Structures are given as C-alpha cells and as structure tokens.
Length: 392
Ligand SMILES: [Zn+2]
Image (tube, rainbow, N blue to C red; front, side, top):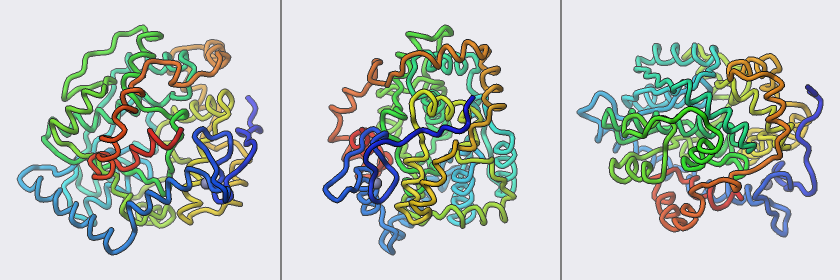
C-alpha cells in the first residue's frame, strides 16, 4: 500500500478555507469564498456565542431539568470515548448538573483506548453507562454490502445504529432529550455525496448485496432500520429532541483536551474519529478509491473558527492521515471474514454514490420547508437543513 499519496486537490480553492473543487457541493462566490464558508457563517448567526446565546442555552438546560425532575435521567447522551462525547458528558453532569444516561453503541470495532476512556469518565462522574451492542451478523453483512455497493458511505450503517441506540434508550426510559457532542465549528459538515445518512438507502444496499436478514424495527430495538416513518415516531409522536449542545458554546479543542485529561484521565485515541477502528479502513478506501480527504471539511471548520491556520491545514493534508494504519486495516479485513484478495476486488469496483440506489432523497427534497422550519426551531439539529440542501 502506498502511504505517500494523499487525496489530491484540484482546480480552484476557497480563499478562506481549504475546500476545493474535489469537494462536492462547492461553489465559489465572486470573492472566491466557498459555499461551506457561507453555510458556517449562517450557522454562526443562528448560534451566536453572545450573552443572548448563553441565555438561550440556560433556558434549554432549565427545560431539560424540569421535564426530567421526577425521573432517574433527564437526558440521554451518546458516548464513544472520543474527545467530543467525553467533554459533552463532563459538561452536562459537572457544569450543568443534569442527570445524563450515557449510551454507547458497540458495533464491533471499538478502540480499546476509547473504551477505557468511557469507563473512566462515567465512573468518575457517577454516570450510568449503557452499552447497546449490535448484532454482529447484521453489522458484518452490512459492512460487506456497502463495500459491494461501492459508495463512500461505509460508516452509514453504524451511524444509523448509533441514532437508533439513542432513540431506543430514550423511548425505554421515557427521556425527551438526546444530547450529542458534535460541533460544526470543529468538525464541519460532510458533503452529501461523501456521507449520506438515510435508513432507506441502507435497506436498499442490504436488499441488493446483503445475505443475512435484518431483524424488524421495534420502538425500543431499531437495529439498523431507521426509516422516515420511524423518525416521525421518535420526533413527533414521542417528542424526542436531539440537541448538539456545542452549537451554543465556545468549543476550543486544545482547552477541552486539558480539562478532560486532568479531570477524567482521558487518553487521546491517536486521531480524530479513532474511537472506531473501522475508520482506519474507511479512510484508506475513501482516499485511494474516491479521492476523498475528510480533513478538507474538518480542517476548514477549524480554520473558520480560528483554531487552525490555513497554512497549517495545507501542510497537514500533504501526508496521509495517521488514522490509516496498515495493521489496523488488516485487522478490520480479518474481522469481516474476507480475504485481502476479496477486499482488493471490492476496491476495483467502479465508484458509485447514494444516487445510484433507492433512497428517501426525493421525499426529503419534498419536505424541504418542514425540515427548514424544524431546523430553525431546533427540533432537529439546525445543521440538518444545511446537510441535505446546501452540501451538494
Ligand atoms: Zn471556504
């Protein structure tokens, strides 16, 4: 395997960030600013880091406490042992005094370092950790099906599994708030064609390439099924809101690292996204088969929020991201129960996108206005609208 070639950049590059013409959904205005920069500026306006913004967050925390005052938990928080979710848990419990229930979705490729982090953090904070483990036969089958589907969305089944695990526990415990540790300021928003999240898409890929049947959806056990009607059930019927709490807070990675290392004995898993070892294989496939470098939108977000310089980002993307470890990639292939030769055959299949499969994209497009309103009202994360309508 060649370790010297990073995903190349081509053509025009944004004058402000490192989004270039290899990033789907890019378009540059007359000043050479890209659409992703404009999107982040818009989100900044929607979530201002001002005293008014802080007041809005205080009101929300008050509402969460009030709704859960007679229950053992007032919110469900997704944890992975990575930086963002560890700090999220710390903030909710220690700073805001909430009663979170930590939920981890184990999809078979957890990094032991991240696993240790989760146990240490929940123990030190006195928070219950509930692990939802996927059915390995389903998970393995879906991963191989996506290699066969030949699209970049190798992580989509896991993302659906995570969303379900959080909704399922929320339904079971009658909790109305799910809190997630994502931030558009540090992570950015992935282009639609690089990371398309849609339950119907997963089921179509599975129907074409899967071999093991997926178990049926239940409100408290969704598995890898998450159709639009299930989302309707969770958000409208059950009234569960998903809150990316960092949107309304200053979130500076270097400062966060210091806090969680000191307070929770947190250890860096080695790279961003490396709480999940499968990301190693994914990074390799994305780079060598699709010419995708996810750091382009990750680092661009850090540049816009003043946490990285453009020069530094350009220097960093010259080399292959450290997450791509040949030993871990081989381990992933072995865990899938396929040979290296079989894996290399999947790599040779012509690249496709979600547009080559049956998805809910047409339906989502028809729901543009309700999604815009729900995003504005923060019923769903405000980035949802941006993701489906402004990223490609
Ligand atoms: Zn830009």
